[in-house]
Amino acid sequence: MEFNQENRSYCTPVAVLDTVAEQLADVDLTLPDYCPDIEKILKCTLTPKIQSRSLSGGQLQVDGYCIVNVLYVESIKRTIRCCEQSVNFSQCFSVKETPDNPVIITKTKSEYINCRALSPRRLVMHGAFSLYAKVFAQSAANLYNPSNDEFETNRQTVRCADLKSFCQEQFSVCEEISVSDKPSIEAILHSDVSVGITDAKAVTGKLMLNGEINLRMFYLTDVESGETGKIDYLLPFNQIIDCEGIDENTINCVNCDIMSYDIRLKNDMLSEKPSVIIDVKLCVTEEGYIVNEEEVIIDAYSTAFASLPEFEQIKIIGEATPINDSHMEKVSVKVDDGKISKILDIYVEQITSESSLSDKGMCISGKMNICMLALNEESMPVFIERSADFEHVLSTPDCNSIKIAGIRTASISYRLSDDNTVEIRCELKITASSFSENKLTVVKNINVFEDKPIKPESCALTLYFAKEGESLWDIAKSHNTRLDMLIAENSAEKQTLDYPQMLLIPRI
Image 1 (cartoon, helix red, strand yellow):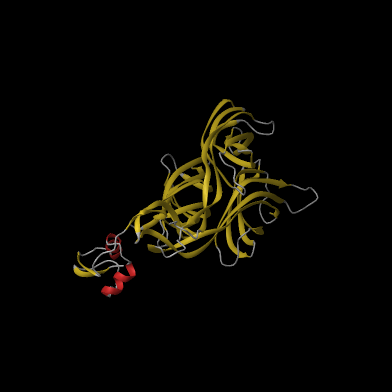
Image 2 (cartoon, rainbow, N blue to C red):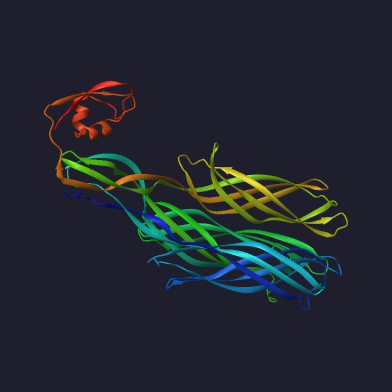
């Protein structure tokens, strides 16, 4: 007797590559002639940017460059200056299996940068950053269901999120931003670009996105005096992405990453309106799910012959929910040495995060690195850096897994509470997806021994004294009878007994 089955499949994303590599960045920097000598180094930063990535022949090739920026106090007028240099990098990862439509996720994290001055005009820097690489494929799994009534089956109804679409697309946003209402820009000292998706709407085969790019820039308005200025600009954008399998009913988890960006000053002598050109390369990844109720078989047996079921463990995503939350964190920064006369700029340089399940619920916690440029009581530029913890409790119920897409700084405000303490309010935007993942043991096959038939009982009914908590399924299986007959004979309302009782076991 064969265990004939009607196989129903569902899809999930599966990682075929999940690795990290360390990249070194060594720079021997000599200041150009137009830069004054260095008196004091304020901050060295290492910013990796990805230009391209390709997967072919079992190899993932990632190419990019990292910018090493040195912020310093110059020796003549003791104002802030900067100098930077870029270093190319290339990394190849081996992928055991190359999927047909892979989704590639690459992220970078600056680990350290050491800077040593050989002279007032020459610096030697040694740094490193981590390059994280993941490759995902759309994998199908089966739900087994016997197509005949030869077996007794114990079924369980579960919710199953089926991955219907899994797509990725890269595109660029280039814009010329007029800054005529701002003080003139002589040189950029620090810049930061972040991106967020504000709305995602799906139609058949298409995903329509609305988003915003946030440009923050700290710059010199006058090289001679050292006066500085700031720009905080929101650039809206929209994009239509082709996504096979998507429609109005899919639950769409969307992630948008910045691969690289470039900021250029446009100083046209014939124009009275100076402008900044920003060119951002973005990568959007979409997961589209349909949630259905499915029946799985957790046990089975034959009433005619001796049988032995074979089991396997499967993982089912029950729910998928996109998350777009805001978190407000208050931080007090105290300056140990000296006093602050003026705040020039405050920004968050790096945010790390992880998810965990606690008594409060599902939490996202991490650290953010707060950087502050200020003037001390002698009007000398100083750089202050502090690490701050944050924790955000998600309101999403019934989830046990979180995939964090990104956390960005939406806004940052501050005030001097006294001459050596700064009160900072930082608003974080959290983009993530929550999932309820269940591991189930299900039947994948039944071995039926037709040479061992079950002998019929001589009596039509058997009395059985059941204990509290016993399962009617287990009782029916141990007596080789049908569950529906057992339930009908005893007018049972529940599968699990609430109290000890006598049962009538019908015989087939």
